[in-house]
Structure formats: structure tokens, C-alpha cells
Length: 419
Image 1 (tube, rainbow, N blue to C red):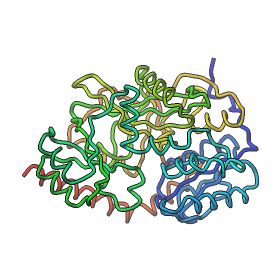
Image 2 (image 1 turned 180 degrees about the horizontal axis):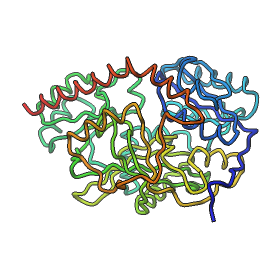
Image 3 (image 1 turned 90 degrees about the vertical axis):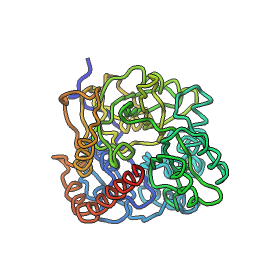
Image 4 (image 1 turned 30 degrees about the vertical axis):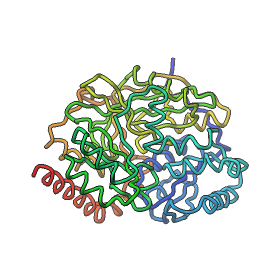
């Protein structure tokens, strides 16, 4: 019988390195990974924007490497920087990417990085394709996985033809994940109410719009589900978790703010079959939306790396996806066990505004338990409190202003659509 009190026999001679490209210091996923492996006695290192990030403040961090990046640097420069960090650590180290740019770089530059680092073997082009909205949609079509109907216009003329025949509302997203680092055509997921609004927006997208236009799944007819898992070299799931997203920020289209572990064998099986067919190895974070109108789970996003909310999920042995990867790649057995159903995850700094927004909208999640079996907080931890206070200092003033700006922009857009 599994027991959470049984110590996990991690290989403490193999450290972990949190790899992130771009300026987003308030990332609770990186802090969660540092704590998860650090509590097992695994030495943890991290790339940080500066010395005063929450990750840098963790008691479980052996050392932070200050390396400000934008995510748009040439691959050669990023590889050189990682190899330099590897030389300073001085022993084989597990790479743990927290964004698509890092996950794609590691896959595409595997030959250069492998002498100093451990990471899953995967087809070099696959993570980039999975992170792309167009690439993911094509893979879903190829393998019979439901996904929202989508169009990928290459010109204003194609958009005009689409607008004349489409059923509105629709949503627009950037076609490639990396566009958010440059000059994105749209910011996040943008709901478009009608042809006129679409054509007005499209005039700002340039001669070759890098967008995907997707069918809108009404929130009152949908539920947001998440799947986190770790797959070995044979694309077999060594850990698999399912949960339901209760709130996100920005509302219905952003980062998870509140979620519960809920058993969903059907969704787990769909994910396992898809991963097996495409041959992926490593940690995955998938967003699915259940459409009550046709009874289908539709795949929205595929993150080929650790998700920020991964600490929502543990099995009865205390295994999460980061621990599973470290155990597997260091030749240790990954204990199998049931996920801890009813467990709740809260991101303190964004769940409060999300709660207010969802309460006004009347949105509910039928599958969420009435009461959690336990709660994991993104920032607060009794054994590692400094990241929480560091987050507060960095978040309160600029963060509150940013949240207010986002909320006002969305309210203005809704009014414009209504008019």
C-alpha cells in the first residue's frame, strides 16, 4: 500500500536547473519546482532575472544565476549561456524549462547540450510544433483529436472572406507561441463579436497576419480541464493527473488561479493515446475544454514543459511530474499511485481579482468538489516563506496597476462589442 510518509529515494548527486528565458520574475511554477526537488535533498539551481526574484529567495535554492534574457536571442547565444552555467555547476544536471522558448531550444539544440545536461529525448522539431497553435491544430487533425475549428489566414483578403462566412463570435490568438516576445498581433486570447470588429482589428495585423482565428466555445456551455503528466522514452505515462480549472486570470483565458484535482479517466486515456501517437517524451501541461453542446473534450493548448500549476497534482506517494522526471532520468523507479483527488491549488496574488470577476459572471464549475481535501498555495509555504514576501514586494504596486489596466481594457472591449 502506498504511503506518503515513505521517503522518495531521489539521486541527490544530480542537481536540477530551472531554465527560463524572458522577463517574468513572478513565476510560481519555478518556485514550486525548486521546493519539490529541494525537499528531497536535490541541489537546485535557477536562471533568474536578478537577485531579488521569489525563486532566488527560496531556502531550497543552492544558487541562482542572474541572466536577464528576452527570449528572442539567437539560439547560439542561449546555448553558450547554458553551457557556461553547466560548467559552473560542475556535474550533470537535469534541465527543467518553464517556458516554450526554453523547451524548444533544449530539443533543437540537444546535441550541444547533452554532454552537460540531462533531459528527455524527443524529436527536435516536435516541441516547436506542439507550442504552435497551427502546428498543434494540424497534429490534432492528423490523429483524430477534437479541437476547436480554426482558420489560419495569410492575408487581409483571406480574413475578409472568412469574415463574410464565419459564425461569430470567434477568438483570435497569436499563431506562434514566440510572438508574445516580439510584437504580437493580439494580446492573449481576444474575443471578437462580429465581422466589422474582425476587419478593424485585422488592419493592424500587417500584410501577413500571424494569427489563428478559432471558434468560440461559450463559457456557459464549457468546462476547462487540465492534464499534467510525465512520459518516459517510450512515450508511456509514468505519472498522469487530471483536474478542473475553477478560475483563471485574465478570466477564462489566462493563467490558472484556482483549480481542483478531479479524476477523469476518459481525458487521461485521450491524452495518453495522443502522446503515444506523436511520440513525445517529457513533462506536458495540456488545456482541454469540454464542450457540453457536442459532448467532446477539445484540446486548446499543449505546453511541452512543466506547467506553472504543476504542484496541484501529487499521487499518494508524493510524486509530482517534476519528481517523476528526475527519478526516471536518473534511473530510479517512479512509484505508481492514485492522484490525490479533491486537492486544491490557489495562486494567491491573482485568485482574488479572478474570484470577483467570476462571481459577477455567474460562471460555475460543476465538477469542482464542494470542499477541498487539501490545499496547496502557490507562494506561501511554512518551510520556505521568503518567496511569498518577495512576491508581495514586486507585485503589489506594479502588479495591482497592471491588473487594473487589464480589467479596464476588457471592460471597454465588452462595451464596444455590446454597442
